[in-house]
Image (tube, rainbow, N blue to C red; front, side, top):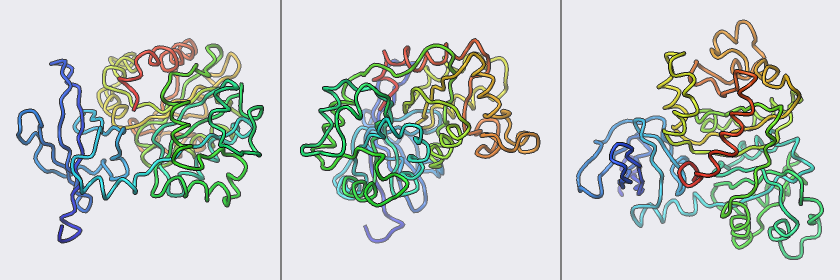
Length: 359
């Protein structure tokens, strides 16, 4: 390709058509210089979407296993579509993994923010409580600092990260950044990274959620894309709230509609909310506390409209990180009786349909 304006990447994507009950495949073409996209229908051999400007899609969002939303269609990226794209992006979008160890779980937001402020982006995130044998399986050979006793049968958070030269970059960062030093069990090689995948993400592990005296916070896709999820979690933890479960989800449209159904006849932004929830990755947090936890956290979340929040409660999450009633950074459980129900939806109901909603 002759110049940067001509640079184009190609991906194979899938979209499930709910009306036809068919899984359809397309080529998604992306020109980073102009932030334009085009889609080609692979079955019918014709252009599905003519080249157009699509500002919400960035190159960092386009990795195999990820999802992007194009005009309310959630597209799952399943492969590179040509050798040029594979050659250019395979190293740029390299992967690694780490575990925020149980002793530092209370610093989840702080550590996550440090990772995101570096070169990394998140592709998966999950709180786990590993058995001794599982814990032993992710310890590298010859490891002396971390032991099974330090990570087994307690809640930690495992994160898959994407960055250029990811394995080496994370090893170097974990050893040099004072904000995270001593907090991470890091994949030390490509083989060790695969051990993480085999133990954590290739199986459905028991949830760490507690289904009593709890509430839900969903960090919305626009906030995840902006790289501020660590800052939001840090603010939650700094206010004294305990996170008992966390997971990164790519919600499909049926799941988002089901979860938000209570708002369908209540607020005019319902359709826009569904579009927002399906536009990329969300990070779902379960927050545990006393019987007033839903109301207490709602006070920290702030008014649905960030503009109102900036005037009446400027120290709330939505006032600080939100921009409007749809892009307001987080969803927070509204009603006391819904705290357990929303927790069960994400950490029980959706666990049974993971292939449809997860990477």
